[in-house]
Image 1 (cartoon, helix red, strand yellow):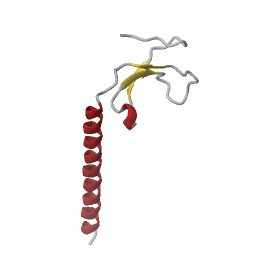
Image 2 (cartoon, helix red, strand yellow):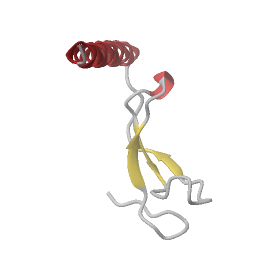
Image 3 (spheres, rainbow, N blue to C red):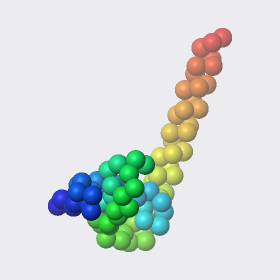
Image 4 (cartoon, rainbow, N blue to C red):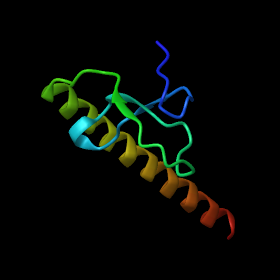
Length: 82
């Protein structure tokens, strides 16, 4: 479905990351930061609280794995210097 904004451009679909609306998609202006257009429209319905909790946990776990991987790469680089 195409959604036109008041300015005539097609709305872009983005995904919300804050916990309150985690994973919900919405239409917004495709010109991030460069437009005064305040267009906003939810694309997805609310998620079940259990889904939000599971997704939040998965994102935290992924962030911990990525952090550990970065630390290992840094340690390997440090060890190669000797």
